[in-house]
Length: 263
Image (tube, rainbow, N blue to C red; front, side, top):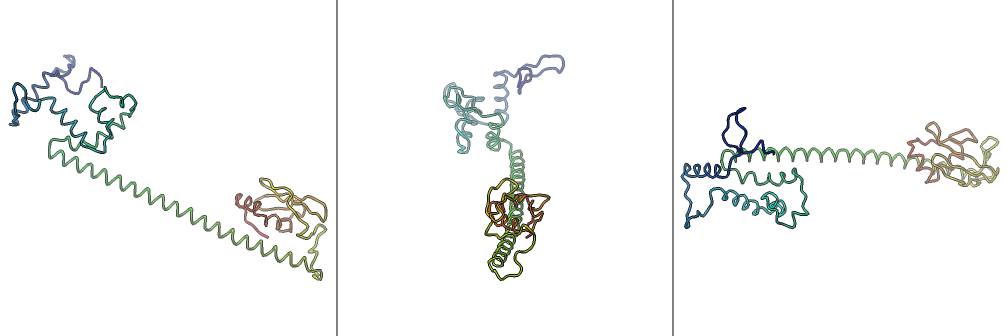
């Protein structure tokens, strides 16, 4: 609001006369005429009326504000324009926040029954729209949560199957290796070894270094081209890969990289 565009102004000719704010005397005159025209009666005590023609509106406004338990004292004082209050020295509500509180009493301040009904209907429609939006948001949020939970369940089920497969293969291999009469051991290849000869030397962000005590050599098992790969055997299904996958820490790294396990 600026001085050159007041809310209430005296009569003037557009483009000819300067805008002049409505004076206090002029406002009292308008209100007094409206009171007489409406046939309202005010009790008079001496030279004063029980309800002042102009200040009565302010008192009514203050009464409505202070009867509301859902509007804070600081907001009430700010809306009334009171400045001699310690709380207002610390209260820094924005214009939007103050107006949000003011909206709560618009219905009580409305004089016309027709306007009040219109406002009531509009407020109801706004509330219905807000509740519908909140409901849709909650439903959308629940659907998204359910989707993520389903994906997590499917991922856990996949991991459960993979770990069972790894453990089964591990047990099968160790049983075969522990039988000296087994004609299928060694399985083949110059670097074939027993699982019991392997130990973890180092785990990195995308690899594991496995130490083979039988050959006295460190072997790299790495994540390469969406598979777990042994750089020694140049294979993704050798015992070094099986040993690495049986390690929970390395298996977690494999799953974080979304690599499908095959042994």
